[in-house]
Amino acid sequence: MTPPDAPSNRWSDLDRPPLNTAALRRGLLRPGASWTSLDVVETTGSTNTDLAALAAAGRLAEGAVLVAEVQTAGRGRLDRSWTAPPRSGLFFSVYLTPRDVPMERWGWLPLLTGVAAATGLARAAGVDTALKWPNDLLVTVGGQERKAGGILAERAGEGVIVGMGLNVSLGAAELPSPTAGSLALAGAVSLDRETLLRGVLRSLEKWYRAWREAKGDAPLAGLQAAYAAGCATLGRSVRAELPGGRTLLGEAVAIDGNGRLIVSHGDGRQEPVSAGDIVHLRGADGGLT
Image 1 (cartoon, rainbow, N blue to C red):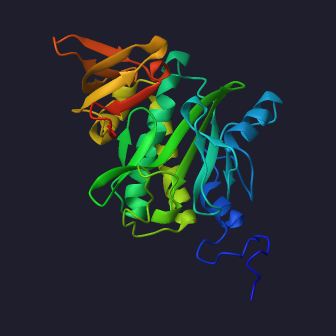
Image 2 (cartoon, rainbow, N blue to C red):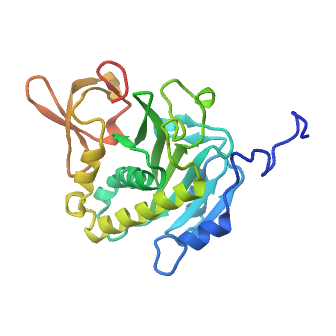
Image 3 (cartoon, rainbow, N blue to C red):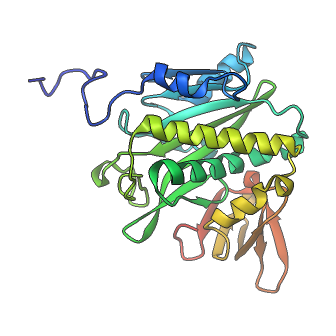
């Protein structure tokens, strides 16, 4: 019997087996694929930070994927922390360099990743995943929307690093907050992290290629419509906290061609809000949008 104070090792929790790097590479690193390398590390502070350091040193090629079994300093927007027990989720980052897309359209990359994750998880896990603008993944647990994942995109080198954290097998007692959720609690048909990771990355590859072929034109690529169809924020009253202490109240009515949220005021005026402008976005009643 393993002593209760014994250090963790790769087989210490057989309900949460380690990822098989060789199998993931066989399934994702094929000729002509978008993914050019894939590495899995046991633990790191942040996969985004690790890839950013490689990009700064000029040692990172487009299509690099870095996965961590556990992150000790995972970050969301505005440096909010993201932590979870080892091997209980998916924590990974990819490096993209869409040089053929005008830079002003690169802001679509986190939204694109959200669409890819939602569609990939629908197939791989059988879970209906909704999108909270601009970067959260929501699942339904006990009839309530809960945040199960988040996306963070950061400029690095000549491209963008897009990171994702997703709660997979966390039980109710392991959740970081009462508003969090996991695929397990949402009734996923599969919690196999390799299956889920392959599903998300293949979906991301499909959407990324379509977006690049359209030169970043989200409506032309079908991305704007797909995001709007899966966005739980639309049609709801929202309260957006903006820099400088300004608060915007209104109804979220659309996602425009630049990926901005269009908020309708009570007097009929409509105001676009970009992800970079948002400090907090909540439902007008204080709940998730």
